[in-house]
Image: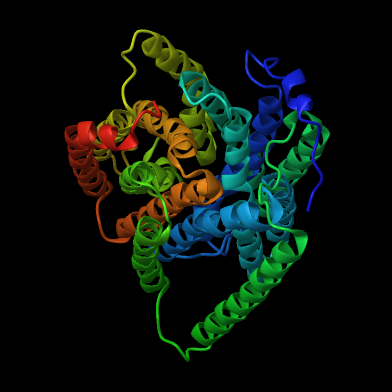
Length: 503
């Protein structure tokens, strides 16, 4: 078990980062560099897989349906493994160690993808999935630990600042990795993502002293019990890895006949079933009081809304990325802007508007007018739907010979940003407030399982571009998400009662 810093080390730096704990800066930059690597590689992923083989900067030559299915599986697994990653932190390592080990695995994954063979491409994706599962939920949990005695608007504002770091990374990643990958060599772009993660790891270790006790293992059990639990986990992990490799081998050899789309759909059903079983288990066998059970119901509802939100929002890396490449006029005074640079519009808006939204929630709270958590979720879905209605309108006027202005995507991303800022940072903060004290890491993992489900369906929906017109696809997505947002607003008073006095 890791040692602990003196308790007063966190107090010494309690309000030295824009009025927030100094440790927030350490986590801000750690997450910024991790998101640099993730979004830098993600911006290239579908473009690389669908790029022709017989060109100088060759891709994999996959069709849209196959590439979108791989994209959906990859991005969903990145978030799905946040659940066991949260458990490892809660029960074996602590969040501090999980974040560092996860970052090392992520860096190795990006450098693996820099090797120009299909084997190392897929091996790298697997490593990134494993590493992100360890890092992603736990860095957010440590942020929550910094605000252990503050569950109000200040905590929400802190998460909004933290979210700004995510999006600075999301700007730098596609800009640098996208430029290198699209204009020179795909694998050079993947290498740059790995370098970014290494920077994040160095910064994390250098700023470790400012975190105080936040993120250390909170288990009261002795070392022998924790060691035995760890051995069981490592054994289970090895067994699951062997089964996955064996399944992949049999599919590759034609022993099992299935498609990537079938696998993705089956995984989607599996995620839903596992999530329901997990919540039922906590509700029945968790031993929690009535108020805690009410909050678990509220978390489950927010989980559903988040999954639906991300199923639309994460079209950015798939269907919207392909729309930007094929149907958007990117010519600026004779120079064609890289497709990946349009991925920057959303994070640029986030960086601009995140502090404004953070200030807005605090300002409204002082006047007892701060919207409840479920209302913010409903507003987020409405904003997302509005963006897709705009994009559907623009796509209806686009063709290969008559490409449309990037302004359609810019307006869409603006509306998506408003939706995202109403839901995502508030969601992160709400989980740390609503979760049972002994399940915070796992509940943060559940939040990212919702993102996993959304990413998976985003890939499956994007695959329909193989046979469906873009404007029809975007219109269908807008209708579904818009109706969900209206339902969310209607039932928000009931959900607010379930959350109790956490707000």
